[in-house]
Length: 342
Image: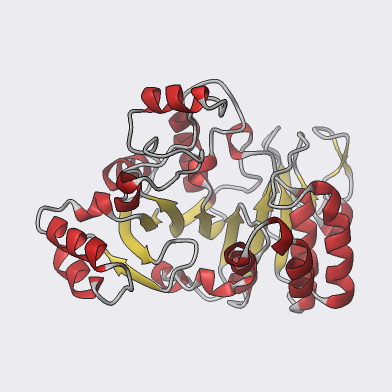
């Protein structure tokens, strides 16, 4: 196993995961063979927590997809079900130029679609999440797929912890739909402070030449100008100044606005300042959660050549086409797929 590092005392953990660790008062290796570095009990999911034991039991006996269809569908929709199951969500991985048998860290692994897809590369995949219940589901899913190279790791929310890995460990770190949530688990300080710390922590864990993949919404994306709801369930708050956005969310009893997305310029600045040497931007269609086509946006001419094959509306395509002549398409695309190399 890759050498782990305790997020609390920063001491190396080699083969002693079954021994009581002084920082936790228990062994690191816990139920269902999950490596547990979490202090807090944290749960966020589409379905109620009390339903998770039933889901896992059915997954063991009837299969993971049947379990998701029975228990996830009633609390969500067909889109969420596909999001939880479809391994094609990781089809962007060739952009990262991975070595043979890469070491991969999937942060916010959710139901395990991306982790299971990347496990097919025959490397070592660490599935990280703050929900131990969904990690237990991922272990069942990995067993169903006969994967022995997926290791589930329970961690506290990123703003509260360091990553449990030594320096220069991973070839790839994945943050798909995660960065915008960093800062939500605490009330103090600007969320961007925690986002920057997390990016620096990822840079520490990556090997020289390793890649970070980020899937995230664009703060000023086309659809937000036309009233699309952002992560707080409110309209226009993404594009407004943060303080104004907080006034709106507080009036709606949603608390302070803390789900920060950013422009391409700000994201690149944050990544470079966090230790990454190069940053490449793409835009996925129809969106980063379900990429069917990924178009580079750094070169406007290349962006224009692929734009009308993406399946978006003619109105949106023509606006982005015109905006590309002024370099504004980088801000108006709805989503980013980002590959940052150390």
